[in-house]
Image (cartoon, rainbow, N blue to C red; front, side, top):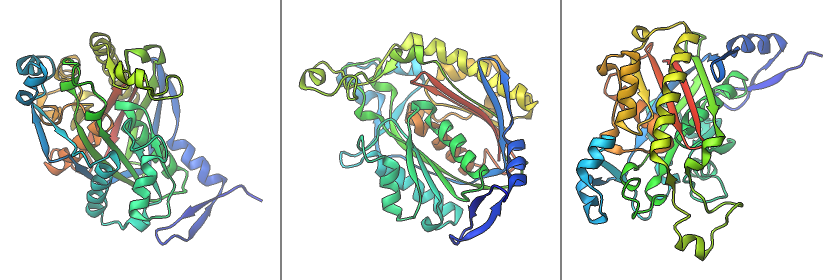
Length: 366
């Protein structure tokens, strides 16, 4: 008997049984190659069917942080951020994720019942358990597996690749990938160099099967765990559980060695983007847009300088939202599509990077 796996169709039945030939066809779309410091791969045969985004209504301008000792001019000059969004006290990460997902499904014309898999990239889950993805699944009531992906600011890229791989297996047809964060509750208000950088928000994409011309023409995921201490939340896990003493010491807040992380980010963006373009056999002129994780305008400026890419081809919404971690890229992708800066058939270079230290970079063919 030939090995096989089942593939679910849109009405929940078994559309067909995939054979060894199908698996061989899929493996040709997921072909690895070594390049630089991490493995380069191709993963096509899927499309971004729709996007959706949500940001909280409360706007916190730089001037609003002056009472905390934050200097507005310093924030703008060093980061490019003018304002950020802050979740309402009764909003948790799942609430933001659900609102972004609802808009995404509406834009796709897909009913929640037809969602086969839910992935939520976040480092600010509602609870340690259950996962935020399971809370999203509970809201929609769909019969679907759900799990969180924790790769910080690279989380959406990890979720995108993971979702695409599930589609490539033939087991699923509608995969919802969400990046959602309430970063405002992880930052110490007394840390005037870190507190102004982060904001809250969510973005979602719906992935579905497509022809092999669409998907990831090239991608890489990587990590350098040796730099993990430079961007971390020390307390709250099994290594250092929350105690009154740890909370009093502020160890439940995110800490960041800004200079170290900045230098690493500039390097990893340049290396991984260059590798992805080379592996895809593309040049800067072949790109329609570049969307980097919205962490710091100086990192974005460095990428523009390194690649000689026209500034109008680099999407930036950092000044409005600050660093929204895993929500950054899907929020930007959704806004770029809504603004007409991206259209079906376009190629966009995506790059997420952050705590771990981890990164994910890809050339996405829409």
